[in-house]
Length: 553
Image 1 (cartoon, helix red, strand yellow):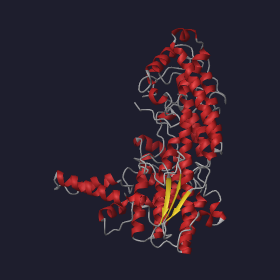
Image 2: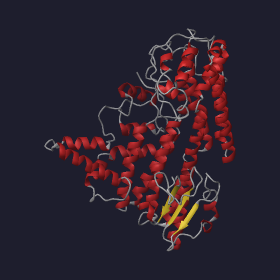
Image 3: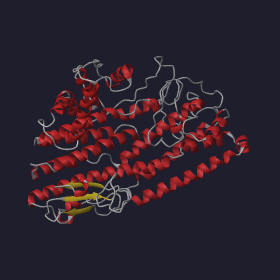
Image 4: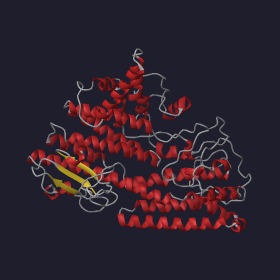
C-alpha cells in the first residue's frame, strides 16, 4: 500500500494523521454512509468538465489539463530533465513508462549517461577497490564526503580536490541536459495515476495525494552538483561558466515553482535559496567587473521573483483545493475507506467522532461547499498585497477556525451525535478537514515573503557591487545609489521599511539584510545563529567584500 503524501496546505489538517495508507479498494457510490447523490458543480466538486465514466470529477485529468496547456515535448523543461536523470527518477518502471507516454517521448533505456549522485559515485569507487579493509573504506567515504561538503560552499580548485573533479566529470553529459532544461520556457511534470485501470469504464482508483508529487530528490541532486561546479569555476576564475550555472539554478527554481502543489513551491524555494547563496559568492568573486555585475543583474531582473503573489494564490486556489476535494469525493463514494481515515496522529476524540459518523448518512455536498468556501477565504487573504491587511485576514481565518473546532467539540456529547442530521455531519467533516489549514496559509505567506526578500537582496547587492567597482568603495548609504536601484528593491517586504545596510570603515565590505519574519533587527544574523543577547535570529542577509567577522565564528 502507498502512504498518502499531502501538500502543506493539507498537512496539519486531519489528513496528516488520518489518511494513513489508502487502499485501492472501495465500495460503489451510494453504499452505507453516503447521502443521496453527489452534486457535480462549481460550488461542490469545483471541477465540472473532466469527468470519469461514473460521472464524477477526474481531478488528475483536471490538473494535467491546467498545467499542461500549451506545453509540448519541444518547450517542456521536464523532458531534458528526465533525460538527465534517467527513467529511475522515482516511482519505478511502471511510472517511468507512463511518464514517457504523458510527455510524448520515447521511453528511456534503463542504462545511460545519467546523473551520478555523490553516493553512487562513492559506491562505484569503492567497488573498484575490493582490497580495501572496512576501516579503509570508511576512511575513504568520510574523506570524499568531507571534501564534497567543503566544495559545495566555497571556491576550490581541481588540484586541491581531484576526487570531486572526477565526480563532476562523470556528470558532464547530464548537466548539459540540465542546462537545456533550464533555458526552456515551460515546465510540466504530468500527474501520473499509476493505479488507473486499463478499462476506461472503470473509475480510477488513485487520489491526487497518492500520486508522485514533484522531483524533490532530483532537485536536491542537481542543486548539489551545480553548486559544486560553480565553486570550482570561481576557484579557477572561470566566471563565464560560474555565471551560467548560477543562472541555471535560478531558472530551475522558477520552473519547479510552477508545478501544481505547495510542496513543489517549497522545493523551488530551497533551490532559490541555494541559487541566491551561489549568486552571492559569484558577485564577490575575484575578477568581478562592473560590466559583468550589471549584465548579471539585468538577467536576474528579467527572471523576476520566484513567483508572484497572484501565481502563488492560483497554486493554492487550484492545486491544493483540488487535492482536498478529490479526497472528499473519494470518501463520499467509499473509494476511501474508514480504516484509511482513522489512526496515526489523530486525537482519540476525532477518531471516535469520525468513526461514529461514518456509518450514518452524511451530506457530502455540504462538506464540499464549506471546503470551497474555506479555500475562497484563504486565497482572498493570500492575494492581499498589503502586509497588515493580509495579517488581519489570516487572524480572522484562524479565529473562524477556532469557532468551527468549538462546534466540533460539541459532538463530545453522545446526544449531539445521535440528533445530528446529514447536513450537520457534513459540516463536521468539513471543519475537521480544515483544522489547521488557515495557520498553514500564514506559513506559506512567510515563505513567499522570504523569497521576495532574497530576490531584492540579490539585485540590490549587485547594484552595490557595481558601485564599489566603479567608485572603489561601497556607498556610505543606500540612498546614494540611483533612484532606479532604490525603487522597491530597498524595501524590506516584512517591515515595509528600508533594508538594513552597513559598511566597513574602509568602505570595502558591506552587510545588507532583511529583518525577517519576526521583524526584529538581529544585525544580519539568521537561523541557527544567536544574537549577542542570546536570542534567536531570522534575518535574511547578503554581503559584499568580506563577511562580518562573527559569520566565521
